[in-house]
Length: 365
Image (cartoon, rainbow, N blue to C red):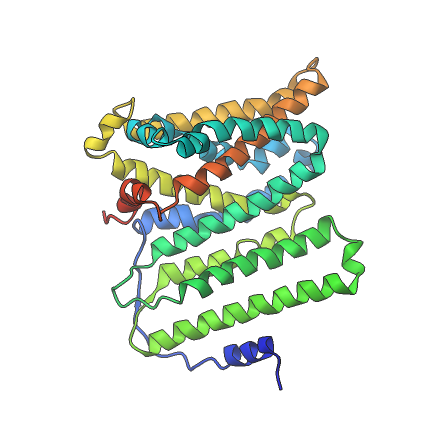
């Protein structure tokens, strides 16, 4: 008798015949924006990685930092998060309770302070928190975007939400384990228990993929249509961390391709949100009457400040080592603040964010 996971594998492998089905291109924000923000970066990111591996660039710490930040995309995307604090309606919401004041005002500086302290007193633990949080942050954005891609109630073939999310999480875990084994845990990888754990996660990942495809095909056979961009985005989300597992010699280096795709996604979705949300009377909540210009001002402000925090330790001749490490830790802290902020600012189960964010993202142009 097969064990439970064996039965799941057997069931998953019994894929029904693929029907002749209707396929539609239902874009999230329109063909141009979707291609630029969600799909083109998947082609360009590997090119940036390859160029960044040039021996001439590796010799320059400053140029290496520029490539690892994809010419500022990373800092730009962190900067535009702070645009939310310049919306007067948001500020009223942030101040509306003690818990919200702690989340939106107290937590960000505390995260930066603890990141700086952690870099001195427990650097390994601080780096581990950053790496794990980074992977979780990237995969959660893919989960959220995939949900937005679906057009519920319009006869689209939509796989069970739990299975869809599980397939993305298992992909992230499996490829992250392969990365950790390759870079940090080479000795541990010699033990049988590690090999068994990785193998079990890999089997669960493959089973989830097969079950996903099986359920999708079943729905197509019942007359639902295939939303091609949504399906391709799911495929892209599965691929997302594959380069992370096999390329690069450090965490930032290995995660570069996934990060570039993530940054482009975030910039694209925030651009659409700002353009749509502040096209009507909501513009009065901003300090500037040109929301798209304000979007770029905030992004460039984040770019300049964070790049300065990285560049000074590399270029200043007489900068004390303590100050240099503190500046780099502050930059790292801002990254973790971004992770924390996004966990709340995109929480669509809260009525406020369904009204002020989700409603504009689902609004058709």
